[in-house]
Amino acid sequence: MNPMIGKELRQRMRERRGWILPSLYLATLGAVIALAYYLMTVSPNRQQQGWQIGVALFFTVAYTQLSLLLLMAPIFSAGALTIEKEQRTLAGLLTTLLRPIQIWWGKFVASLMYVLLLLVAGLPVLSVVFAFGGVGPWEVGIAILTTVVILATISAMSLYWSSLFRRSVHATAVSYVSVIVMTVVTFIIYSIGMLVYHSSASSWDLMPSILKAPLYFNPAFFLTMAFVPADQLYPEWVQCLAVFLLLGVVSTLLTLRNLRRGGEMV
Amino acid sequence: MIALEQVRKNYNGTRGLDGFSLRVDEGELFGLVGPNGAGKTTLIKILATLLRPDSGKALVAGWDVTAHPQEVKRTVGYMPDQPGLYQDMRVGELLEFFANAFRLSREQRRAAVIRGLEWSGLSARRNDYVEELSFGMKQRLFLARTLLHDPKVLLLDEPATGLDPLARIDLRRQLKELNAQGITILISSHILADLEDICSRVALISEGKNATDAEGNSLIVNLQEAALPRMAYEVEVLGSVAKAGERAVEMAGVKIVERHPTRLVLEIEGEAAQASQLLRHLVTGGIDVVKFARRAATLEDRYQHAFGGKPR
Image (cartoon, rainbow over all chains, first blue to last red; front, side):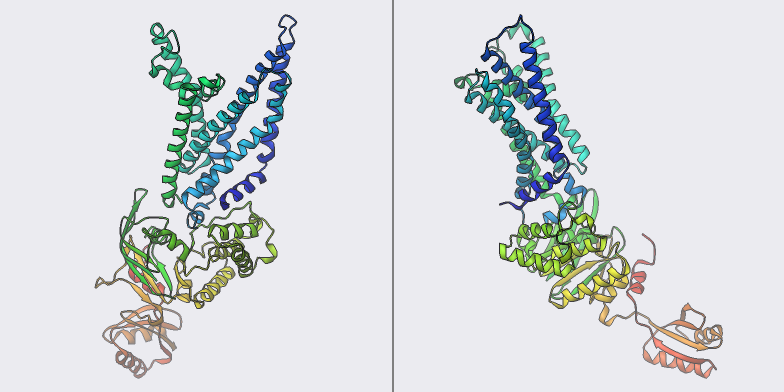
């Protein structure tokens, strides 16, 4: 096994946030699903079928989970390499026989595994929706797969910022800016485009690709496209997948380049 | 064992090395000295494969640092000027991790960790967190970590910085021991007395280049047979030092270098014959000479000579 992975996981679990963040995460997720259930059932005028409640709760959990994990992913990955620079341990690491890709892989896997731990910890909360019906294993599986791809991409991007900056605070700030650009700015650009070209873009299928393009970078849109029937995943979900994978690969290559030049930063 | 030929390196917008050349023989304990910003750290980083030279050649045990970095890493143990350790790891875990990072087998790892703990005197602290160790202990731990994979060459960048006098003495002893075991050591330091004590040769580096003497020769001081261009003699007298000084400078080519309450340091142009003539001149002039000894040139003399004693 890559020695970096063991070292990283051990160090992460020794941090106080190792148990504080999962606790906060589960408390928030539990509170949101309880609130959503309450709002759906409190009004006697809004009598709903059990499966409708199940679907609504599933969407609530899926989007809440994605939002919380998007907030947490940079915490684990943006400081992964900068901490080595701050503690002056990067030089020692780069002069071992570990190659840059092994160092990157160790950091990436450890960051992602911690986020996946949160995702897995949230499964019991998610399983509540099965009690109501309306949601099958396919929906849950594709939602989890999409969330994992998004989080892996965000982790890879945050690791790039971590390889670029010397200080964790800078890398973390820029990582959050990246998340905001992907989630909020892309949506704003799309909305502006819709306003400008409204007359010629009445239907999604007829909309010019240039108008839709910003949404392919948007994690919420990517997750939404996962909820279409399986035979309709192409083109939107597949295109989103390609964009996120491409972002992840480019970030990784740039990180490896920075690690090879790491001697100039230590 | 180490060879650099006309190595140049600019990075982060500054000049690191500007055509530096050096050859360190196998089994040598070689010192590198120069003012701040002279290029010592750049040079050591290049040999440790952390930086790639812009031009020129850098070889360690015959391996080109640019073409064969993995082989160089296998050969070299590197200790940076500000060595960092994972503070939240236990001493034993840290050594185990680095032994693993050097691809040692399970048995080799176990043996290397035990050897490292014994060598650093930290066997009893194996389960303590690194952050609980004193600065000197951390320095010893780092040195033990650089030795885990049995390197043939040690590159030490200012290893004595921040150590107390006892820890410095201990470090010198350890380096002599390692050198006696056949490890070639290249060490940079500002503490000239330390280098003088342990090194066989010392290279002077200035502004990224080899510091040179008036004839343009690279300044590499052989401490085993060090000599100043002019000979210095320490003369201790009974009675007036001033009178002894006046008498000494009557002779052509004699200059007073230092004046102390009971002794003078004189510089003489020429060989032993001139020294003998000076002694006779002093004695016949009624000066009671109680000591007349040639003073060995110190590295500090050489350093001041090369860099003019100017602060940098």
